[in-house]
Image (cartoon, rainbow, N blue to C red; front, side):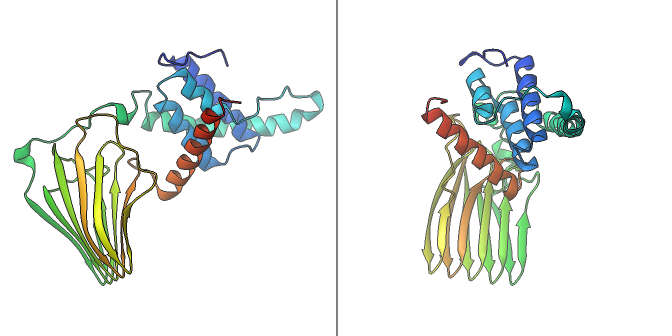
Length: 254
């Protein structure tokens, strides 16, 4: 790849070359499909040339193929073609645009926000997800069952959205997007109550606030940050790639 600037926004050509390099590494079995998809997302979210370089820093450059390896090269080229189809689909979902955490999350006016909402799972499951409108004050209850409240595609109001949790011999899971502030304060009695250790505060000062409080008795209440549409498996690969990137930055890219 050509030398990339550490501060200026990378050109589309630089992103494409990074994608091509990832596809080549996938063809050489250096990356699994899940990690390939995660790094492709990182390419489309990269804001500087340095961030693009870090994505490839732990991968070996593509070797010059020998003539007697022509058959292997044909098989690898087919794999590259398949991985580029994956890259194209990821580019459609994640276009080359500013990273989500750098842009303010759009919010609804106050008159569109209801006052109260209740999501309950008693000896069963309760769920709220998709493009829904959370109230200013929300109750999430899991008793001998589970309750999941997904705010990633929710249409939030500005300011604070309250979530009061009660988990009794059950589980309440809160999924939060990365572009909101998360405040979590609760009590766990013979259980757990907390926010994922991978949570990082968004950069934008006017980001909405998701305030989670409550009580977990012989159960669990957790707040996990994931991107919209991201599965737990996808998040695992993303966090693994981000961890590698941070380690490389700490070592100065060596």
